[in-house]
Length: 256
Image 1: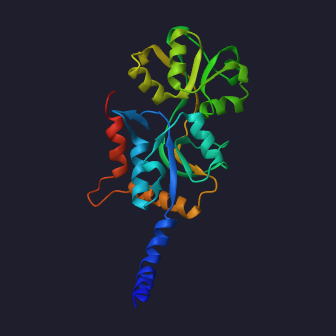
Image 2: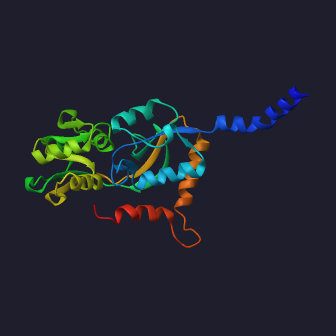
C-alpha cells in the first residue's frame, strides 16, 4: 500500500517537475554603455537594463547566474555568436548582423558618430577623408564594422576594448577621431572629468535602433514571448501612462 501511495505522489508531482526542468534559461550579457546599460553603486542599471529585466521577469525566462552579466563588448560578442542560450544588449541592429542573431526590440535609438576635438577643426565630408586620420574604435562594435564596410583600412583604426581608452587617447592627441555612440561618449566624458563641449561630432555614420540580440538558434517561441512583453510595455496603461516612457525619462531627464 505504501508503494502505491508513493507512486501516486510521484505521478502527481511529475508534470510540475518536468515543467521546471523545461523552463528556458538564458545567459544575458551587456557592456558598459551609459545611459543604456552601466554600473552605478555596484549595480548594473540603465534604460535597456530595466527594460530587459522587465520582459524576462514578465515572461518567466530565467537568467543564468541569477542576473545580467557585464562583460567587455568583444568577449560578449564572441560568446553570443558561438554559444546557444545566450543574449546580449544593447546591440545595434545592422545589416551585417541581421542573420547572425535573433532580435527583440527596439529598446532605444542611438546616434553612431565620429567625434573630434573642436580645436582640430577636422572636416569629414566623405568616407575617403577618414583615410587621413587615426580613428579610435571598440573592437567588433557597430561603429568599427560600419567604417570597415565603408572601406576604411584596418591600419587606420586604433582597435581597443573599452571606450574610455579611446577618450583618453583622443584627449591626449594620440588619435584624431573616435567612432562610437555619441550619447555614450558625452556621458563618459562627464564622468571622466572631460568637458564634452570641447568636442564635436564631425560625421554621422548611422542612427540605428538598439536591440536585445539572442543566439541564432534561440527558439522562435521564446523570441515571440519576449517581443510581446516589450510591445506591452510600450502601450499606455489604464491611467494613460506608458511604462516604457517612464523608464526612459528616468535616465534621460537627469543631468549627469
